[in-house]
Image (cartoon, rainbow, N blue to C red):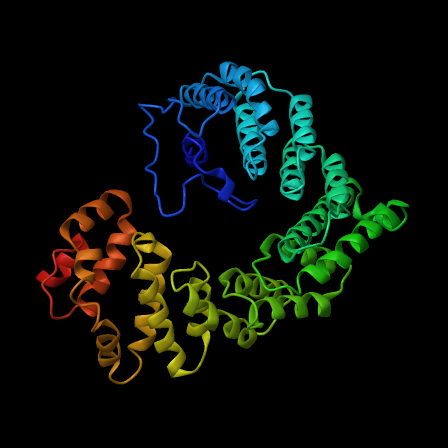
Length: 427
């Protein structure tokens, strides 16, 4: 609603505005935001009858939307489109974007809206001006995609991809690349549909093999170029890798995933390491390679679910230091409340400590890891309320945690005990 509130402020010295202005405040003057309960409709010395009428119309649209009166909002919206004829310099683009946002929002909630209504609105708004053409086209394709009209969505993106206006700015180039990326994603979706239509036995005997490969080629050419640009490209990476795997281009897929995970030009992205790990695991990579990937992931997201697999790999290692690393990995997971009641994590911790106990001075190793936790871990895991809750919900979890309580916090008197531990202490 911020755009609505900004639009409802009276015009003031609009001659100072340019095409990139987003507000109507005069230089050196800061106007307060409009209160919803008391709209401003008074005519000012800078406001014409035209602006007063359209501002009143905008207020009615806002009130109707706030009260979910979508039919009423749609009727007022039909009148508000006259704002594109506003003669004030620099205001037309702002009004066009507002018309775009309001129209699609009203249609989204209107109970009787149809796909034809959406298509008419999007096509009309696209041709109101060039500033938002690419983003409107992308939004239009999303809406078509949600309704299963994949070919139509691709057609609109292909048209937007070839669209040019005036001197191409850097911002416009970025938007065009985004359009190209999503068009390639639609090629992938169509490729998937055709892949699942035919069984693996008939695939190589079918002419659809050629059709499928054409969609793969179209998508891969664009994606290969797009993915050279630093950014977060998760869905595009996954799509491209799936197609490369299907055609057994494993070296190319592995290179792509390695670059995505380790190229310093790309922003840190835990998912990049997850995708690389999953790919390596699918193709039977050695434990050493798997651990190398997870070693970086644990630094980025110590609470990630794959840390359970990482601790398992460390536990299987013959190196004494890896067992100590496994202890740190599992304790780091349990620092997060999301793992507090997870039986698998506690059983893993139990297994790690049991293996550690085969080493000399194992208690010192545990003590060092717990030194920074001793003041707050009991409150996080080992209170009487935790014992009561675990006793009701998961008796096995209660037994495992109770067996570890004294090992992890030997200097603390804890109220977390199981019946089995209590009997053991009495004997």
